[in-house]
Amino acid sequence: PAGPSPRAMISQFYILSLRGDTIITRDFRGDVVKGTAEIFFRKVKFWHGDAPPIFNLDGVSYIFVKKNGLYFVATTGHNVSPCAVVELLTKMAKVFKDFCGVLNEESIRKNFVLVYELVDEMVDFGHPQTTNTEHLKSCIHNEAVMIEAPKTGLNLPQWNPRTVPSNAVHRPVGPTQNDSSRNKKNEIFVDILERITVLMSANGFVVNSAIDGSIQMKSFLQGNPELKLALNEDIQVKNQNLGGFPGGYGAVMLDDCNFHECVDLADFGDQRTLSFYPPDGEFAVMNYRITGDFRVPFRINPVVEQQTPHKLEVIIKVRADVPEQNYGGNVQVSCMLPKGTASVSNELGSATGQSAEYLPADHKLIWNIKKFQGGTECTLKSRVTLSSPISNTSNVKKEVGPVSLTFEVPMYNVSNLQVRYLRIAERHKSYNPCRWVRYVTQSSSYVCRF
Image (tube, rainbow, N blue to C red; front, side, top):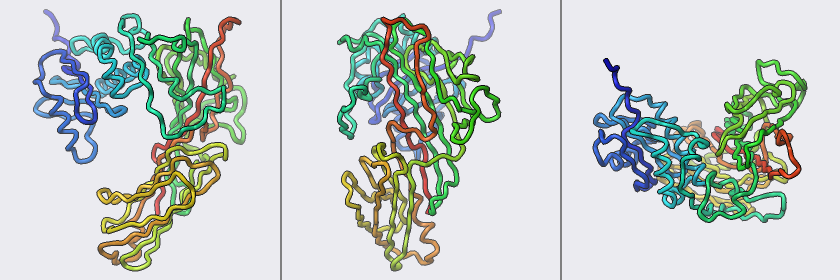
């Protein structure tokens, strides 16, 4: 007798905008009621706090991931593995980004025919088939419509002929409708991205710190040649006895790391070199984690004084502890103020490109610094008027704070992990691709207590 039929994975898939508009929708099995997109959006919008990635309503499971202002949602009436569906949605979003070049509402709308073709190749009757960009390239026939990436606030002069704009990497892996010679260019992009978590006390002492790093790559090389990527010779991994250069003072000490399945680690032990044939699309060559001491990029010094029972003065000093030639971009400092705050007047330093405002609904003070040059210091002085006095002066520090920071520092990384070189294993004189390397440091959770 035939065995039980395998459990279906998903019944419906859709992509929604932040306004709740359905951009893409596909019903694979017809076994879940219509109109679930509206039910899902209403539930998520009015959830107290952030909605969990999976919830069940009237026997239907809703599983979603949110990326770049879009909801990628799957529904099912079956008992499926939530982790497997979250992984599927994440991989699908990555495939859309690979084929459209950039992942946002405009690119999905303009490439909706291509996106529907991708959905039908990736999922069949609710069962995942493949989310491998290389496999999909051979069976996708629609061409992508290129989207102009939005301009960032920082209008920096392109003074260096050896640089390309940061949006050059947002190129579809497949053919595009307005194909130009630029799109056929032989090039490879490498991003060393580090997200840092820091908790510091009011006197500047770092209580806890960690770096989550990733070497991301996107290849547009013809012929798929073997590449060799060399990192610092003094990299050491905890509890692993790597050969080669011994790690002395200033060596990069990784707590742990993992590599993409395409990477050959034969030369990593002795020469810290990774060999691989790059797959199509964007992929992480290596992920790593560091929890040792490192130089934090921003020092925060917050002070609060109670001048009268109804008046507080909050002074926040931030120093950019990065080299003078670097800068923090789109730095945002936020500080929680007492619930009884009636009004706030802010006094900023002389530096331009700064703004500060109080958001009464969130009891939060927001201070924006467009471009924070390395080696400089910025100060915000806020006079807070309270509607009801804080009875116990020792409670003032409990009512104010913490201070948190979000930022991005281009062309700088905290760990000192460097790409020594990126070479093609067997080079021919006629084959000389462009290799672009970029370093970015971002805040993950950067908090200072009062």
